[in-house]
Length: 509
Image (cartoon, rainbow, N blue to C red; front, side, top):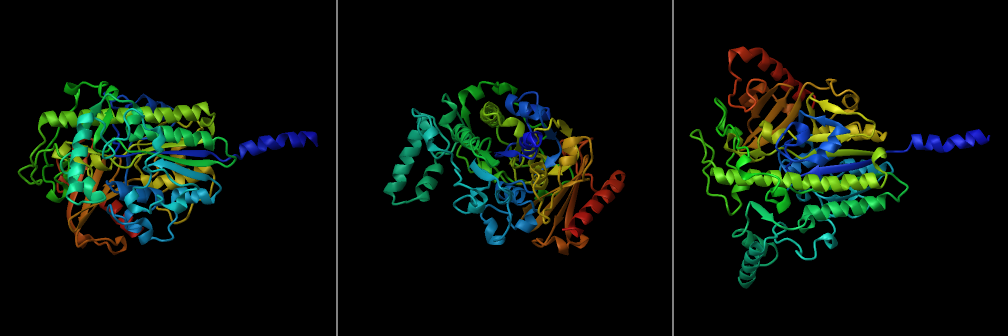
């Protein structure tokens, strides 16, 4: 009898549920050491990658914050969430929808988060209240801001001269009778630089505060009996590219890699491009014409290098914050029993095709980093196509909780165990341009894009007659997407295969 009682704790430990540390990084493209970038300095994310699986051909469902995050966190594609923009609330479209953290909460997890997990424009003021066991801290804990610097102006800027300008224009706005956000809107029409390099500590900016807030949560969670789901949402390298000077100093401006191809793809449809509207809202960007068949105006080379420098600095800044959180996980003895997921919500154009920001169906916008370290010594690089829809069912499997039947993705557990295994032939992304909805089908080698006309929103009503234009890119021969080969004879069989993928996708939605 004594022997039987002695084995009970061991059985309990074997069945212990794993915690989940869910790290989101805004606008992070896969320029990371673990993704083969030799210039960037990301030792902490690379450290995580060494004890996990790197998904090298992973793609978002839509290359813009709110739709991408809504799709990932609900486990269904944008045509079902009906969140295609930055203003639609998820639960206005789907009042009873089940989200990833909500599902974990219902299965005995204590769920909490700091920073940007959902895009706040698609959820309620509590960042989707039913998802969390406690109130979500979107901006982190203000007590962690550096006392000397105080909070950044407009949420971003710490340089004294920028703060003075912001104060000046806010005062002007108040004198004009403006109120609330109208005051801020007036100020940013004059003061909104794309970059900032300030000699300040990490917690002078919000992401340093978020890291400290996350560590605070981890310390409290380590004392709870129930397993936890902790979301940590970092906000850089989203524009503006602000980071402490020490991260800028990791790079030399002259070494910044300009995009090698800054033109439209030959034979490519013009509706595939945009005129970098998000970037043009910043006050230090010169006026740009719309993209046209004569090419758009290009950002001056020195400004390109400055912004690329800023992007790299911001990535290294975030890497350091990720490192602090991972160190805390280690020091609290939580690492072995915690699944760590790191993902960027979509990619980002750094001047390729003459484009900046996201909002396309091209590779630089849809390809997004995803790393999963499940604590089981499953390591390697997975090159099979995957997508963010796959995260929900994967985490259910890793946590040993039931997987909802309605999810659109598949579990990646087989490739965590064997990264060379092939699970699916393609990943799907989509983006609207005007009245056309573009659907991109990315296989291991090719990308096939169909632009469907007439404000198409119902996949069950798809027919080939609705396709207005097509694209096909061969990433083995043409990684920079310089030529649309959809009508070339030598790609006829490839196109036929990609068309089958397309028809299969719409048939099974």
